[in-house]
Amino acid sequence: MIKILKLTSLAVILILSPTCALFAQGPPTGPTLKLDAAYLSESSVESSQGSYSVAMAGVEASYKYFTVHAAQGRFNWSRVDLLPFGDGVNDPWSQLNKIGLSARYRGKMSDKWGYLLGAGITSTFEEEMGLPSYSLSGGLSYSFSSKLRVGAGLSLGHNDIETTVMPFISFGYDYGNSRNNGVFASIGWPRLSAGYRFSPEWAAKVSLALDSRTYQLATGGIYKLRDDSPVYPEGYVGLSGYSPGLSLEYTPTPSINVALGLSWWLNSEMDLYNDDGDKQFIYDIEDSLGGSLQFQYRF
Image 1 (cartoon, helix red, strand yellow):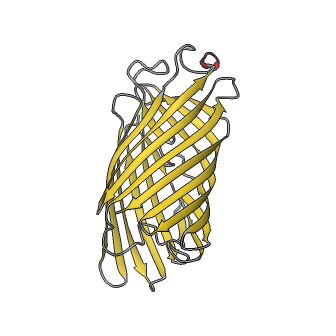
Image 2 (spheres, rainbow, N blue to C red):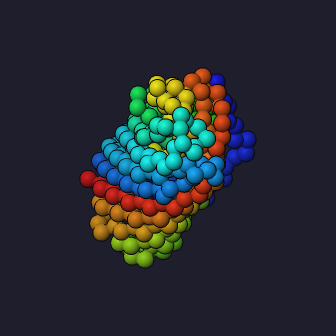
Image 3 (cartoon, rainbow, N blue to C red):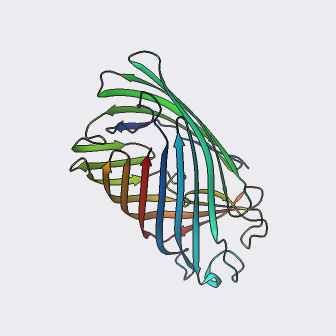
């Protein structure tokens, strides 16, 4: 079953950081390597005594227009006999994985006009690689000055479970960017962030991930379950939620960035689908606390 999700209203994005891909102009960057690790504390399912915690790790490598990424979430279950799904004996699943490849091209049509084109494919699964998801995106931007820009675009995503359509309008102003002291922010959908850079090396940031299907590592999205799953053989599980957080960033050189974060996982839910992709059950997940560590190196 294909579920069509339409965002009928335009998401208006105010970007105060030059890192937004839609606004960024100029030549592609050199190779970049990013390593992530995170942990989510134990959360119960539907207020039962059955619960789980998650340890996650991810890697992302980018060069010029291309990015490859992989992530895994390892689940530690407690009292599986009290869970409202599964066979009450075996863990519903032990891991969830993401592997993907994306390409992005930014160009200029004139001194004022720029554009962005993007495409990607991602596989999300428990054991056997499956559930490929495809994405296309495009946008135009107009620069009033080196600081002030406006843009609009459209993002499309599709897999066997759902199709998403997200149009947007964006406004941007560069201030307090990567090496300048001061306030920086990126306010929009699906992520909001704001912070203050105390020095070229140190910055503090608050953030909120709003789009439940896209947040970090291997915790959000829809995954293909294994063929002999005790939940639904060859079925699917969808995980979603909101994640406000705080982080402290250290940038000793322009090539190195280290971020230590604390996050809260709120209003989370778990959706279970049968092998035909039909949603069977929706379960509420208890709010939990998490921590993360990220290392990024630009060659």
